[in-house]
Image (tube, rainbow, N blue to C red; front, side, top):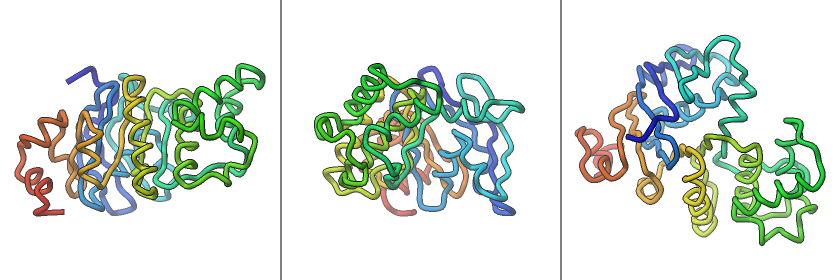
Length: 252
């Protein structure tokens, strides 16, 4: 395995009395795309959102264990949560552009982190719109409302907004589930183009998508880590019977 960028050590997460994740220990390599797979309700999104501390926005959540980002425990006392969320961006399952222009959506993150407007901001916005595969489509529309974009374009705008703060890690929570096939393919293409620049972790319920995208795979079952490894190994020669049954469609 390549150098781990993220590590889970004996991670347990509860929603009230319900235990959603049970003693998860795993590593996510630097660069490339890691796919988290498993049936509905197995803890995929919980694991993903633990990586940028978004779970704390939910009442009744309790967490034990460690999550390390480049060896630093992101749940350690006095850690800068805003700093963690800057380093670890999120692309949600449904596009949620801010009620402002296309340009201002992308500039929003840099502005709140103290970056000034001007030519450098213009270049930053243009660069990240291109990185999200949206540059040509909106080059003459940057100051129009983001709400005028199609659903697929809005999701790529949200990708550009996430990239604009230049995160080390990009999380995708079923990022194509609300999109038509062509728009979904465009998001997949952009993720593939970005994977050599950052660590990407994607939750997907589509095994076909995981096979297309993933360099590394984590398989969860009922809140437990069953198996993790390089995509070629896990998909072609899984070690655990539950993994084999899930990939064959016999369970889940």
